[in-house]
Image (cartoon, rainbow, N blue to C red; front, side, top):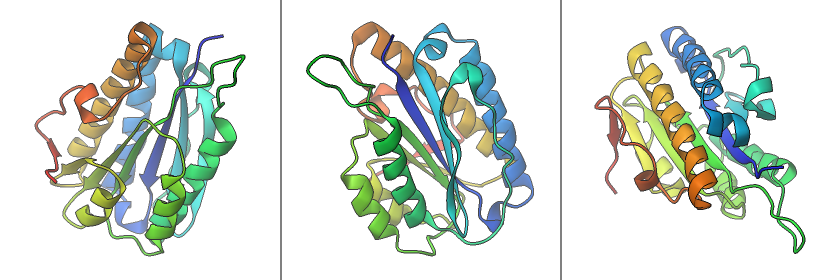
Length: 214
């Protein structure tokens, strides 16, 4: 059995995403899934999970192989519990990702894509502390639109990208880039046996996605 490449999508489904934003997110997920199902490396190694957060955080889809993955019915409502989402991400990784032993190699370290369009409304630093104890290869954080708090995302990771607006075209572009990034990562671990080490190991983002300077 090949080593799994766990990919966690942590998505803001708060009320500010209602309408165009949440519909674009649904379309983006379907686009991502379609692309990965056409990629032999992704089919072999990638397992996807979706965590959503609004007033509460929930794991909408547990870690599932690409062939069996079904996109969740996303709904936008409530506030922005980023801290709860980060804590849930940590516990989900701890529960679902296999660790290596002296007899057997475990899964690859997870690749995480986080997208939010607003400011956290809970204790995000508690979630940050939980995540700091969790082994991941790369966390890519996307600030969708001008209301997202860059300083919070930069505290979580050096790999931060921004969308000037959280409209349908830019959100769909983000998911297309995530698709390409996951596909490249699955090929990388298969051919080079090396994990993703940051944005430099991912495809260059399209013009609508900006790499945030530190």
